[in-house]
Structures are given as C-alpha cells and as structure tokens.
Image (cartoon, rainbow over all chains, first blue to last red):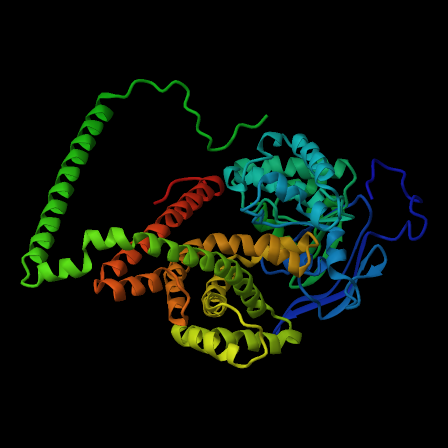
Length: 260
Length: 292
C-alpha cells in the first residue's frame, strides 16, 4: 500500500476513487452524554485532515472509534469502502491497517526502541525479524534516532519518544494514520521536531486524520480542517476558509481563544 | 544528529570550588561519624544478647541439645542429601506454579461474558486454596488421591509437589493479577491499536510489565515456598527435615534440625541476591534517574 507521489488514481482497480475513510452518521454516547452526534466525514487518499475543537468536543473519541478502540452506537465507518463497524469484521486485522499515535506516546517501556517499532511487523504481519529490523532501522535513521535503536524508551526525550511512536505506527505501512494530539504532552521546544515529521509524512503521501491544537501547523499542512463542536461537525473546509473566514459563532469564539 | 538526552557525559569537569570542597569534607566527616555510631551500637546489642542468653540457667543444656558441633558434623551429609530432594521438589514446583498461577491470573482477568463460568471457577479456586492450610492440602493430596486407586503408585514427593503447586498457584495468581491491573490501560490500547490480538497483548505487553511490577512480591512467595517444601516430610518423603528427624531419633539431639534450618536459609540467600541484581539491572535499563 505504499504510495509515492501523485498520479495513482487507478492503481488498485476496484474502488480506486473510494475514499480511504468515510464516516456516515457516526454516533457515540457515554451513558447519557452524547459525545458524537452524527459525524459525517470523508478522508481521501494523501489528504491530511485536521480536526480542531475545544476539549470535550469529541475529537479523541472520534479517532478512537475509527480504530475500533471504542464501539459506536450508530453509523458507518467505511475503510476503503468496507464498513468496519460491522461486528462480523476481523477487528485485529482492521486495526493492523490503521496506524495510531497517542498523546502520551504509549511506547512499551519493557522493550527497546527497535522492538517497539518492529513488534507489529513481527507479531501481526508475519514479517521476519531481520526484514522487520532492517525496515525499522531505515525509518529510525530517517528521523535521526538510529543510535537509539537498542535504547529503552525512558532514555529518550518526549519529542524523541513521540517520533518513535510515529515510526512504530507507520512501520507496517498503514492505509490511514490517526494522530491524536501528538504534541499536546510535549514541551514547546519539542513540538517542532514532531510536527516536522508529520509534514514529512504528508510529503511522502500518507493519509492522515489528526486532532491538534497547533493552529499554525494546521494552516500550513492540513488539506482540510474540520471543526468539531459538541459532537458535531459544524464547519469544514480549507485552512483559509475555516481559519480566516469562520461563519459558525462557536468556531469564531474558539479561534478567538486559540489566537489571542 | 541528535544528542542523547540525559546521557550527561561531562566535558572535562572544572576543578571543584572552595564551597564544594568544604561540603565534601563535611559529608566525609558525617559519614565517618555515622559508621562509628553504627559499629558501636551493633557491638553493644550483640554483647547484650549474647551474655543475656549464655547466662540463663539452662543454657548449658540447650547448647548441648541444639548446638552440638559434633552432632552437626555427623549428621550433615544425610541432611544435605535430603536437601537435594527439597531442591528438586522446589524446581518442579516453581515451574508448575509459574504455569498454573499465570493461567489462573489470566483467566481471572478475562472480561468476555463467554468466560464467566471459567472466571468463577478460577475465583473460587484462589479463594479456596489461599484459605486452606498447606498441611491439610498435603494430607488430602498425598493420602487422599492415591487412596482413590485410579493412579499408579507414585512416590510421596510427587504428591507433595502437586500439593505445593495447588496451594502456591493461588497466591501467585493473585499477585500476578494485581500486577496486570497495575499496567496502565493505555499500554493495552497501544498494543491493540497495532493489531495485536488479546492473547498477544497479554503475552507480549501486559504480562512482562506485570511481572516486573510484582517481582519483589513473587520473590517473597518463592522464598516462602522454598521453606514450605520442607513440609513434604509429613508424607514420608525423605527430605532435609525428614533426615533431620531421623537423625534426631538416633542421637536424641536436636542439632540436626538446626543444621537443616541453616541449610534452608543458605539456599535461599543466593536467589534473593540474584533477584535483587536482576531488578536493579532492569531498573537501570528501563528507568532513568535516581531512586528517591
């Protein structure tokens, strides 16, 4: 599923134009509290979609439902045209097609950096250790962390850990990458190095759905920005449309708060 | 290229300042003083205990029947031979407990409703065997099961091993379960997000971290098991305790028991030290920073 550059429309015959991800009327409640109230969202190949919104607007829950880490109450989640919310779907195999990076990195502390990165390849995708490690070393080299392959995550700074977590998520070439506020737990000094890596992934053609509070980054890198408010998509469009010409009052207020 | 964070390789440290030198001198003085105090206080306590015991009216008789060097030397070989049986029982018990205890812990942690009966069974099992005295389990297994007449005749130590595994697995299962619950849920989340199945998540992510968290408690149970292995003597297995008992009957002297006790302590020491070393190494590798 690797994709280099543009001009790849008709490569995989069937559903070549089907979006990588399509959400239709997604609903999720925790008890009485409705977190997602009918989300419709489409992510096309090579697109970077930034979901923005206040805390509690449902951003993180949205990403969790897409990776089936959280069940949904209604709606459809179409991954390459297949509804993965269907209970008959193989959940583990589906998750293996989607890469996820969490706010708190969640590297495995008892494994070396190399083992963290190669775990899914070896244990889920059946890649041999030698091959998995070669791929991992190449990726680590690209982010300048090759020297840390044998180190344990605790030796790394937050920014380095998060970059390893991103490499872990892309090591087995996922069709879709979900990034859940990947810079929120980081020192401002370290945010840049992580965002640079995300920008690099976009350049290489990754399809990314991410939540973020970094408006500057969203403006520069996002193909589309989606504003989530109380579990609903109230506004979406290009960065210019959403950030410079907001129409919904909630978005206007939100932007006023994040851009003092 | 990035610089290793926190690696802290000093670049030709400058000579310490006057203030720092003065501090170091003070620390050295304090260090010497506290060593002096501890040596003196230890000597005082030892002397008080020694003279207190030696000057009791019955000391001569007690020394004769519990700490007789000649009896100790004479009975040592037999007791050591008996200890070899304890070591073998311990070896097989440890393997059995590790396997069965982990299985129980995992079953108790299963959440799917399909496993409800299994989970109930495991819960009932751990409740029962943690409450039941080992000596009663030994009698039930050692005399009861052979009494059924369906199993071939097996030596007493085999039944003893089974009884120990049954009892200790229930303790170990609870310790492991606590460890598994102490692994942060985000670790499971990360593992599942990579596509790892429930079983692989347990085996590769949760259990290794759980065991690290509860290593001291596991070791504690292991040492406890090591000495309880001596209880198989009640089934007639000739282990260190039984050998001591036989020697005591022959010599009318209790020193063999003292010898056996000492040997149990001695075999437990290296293991305790080794575990400490392993835990330290793991900590150095996986956790940066000091221990405050």
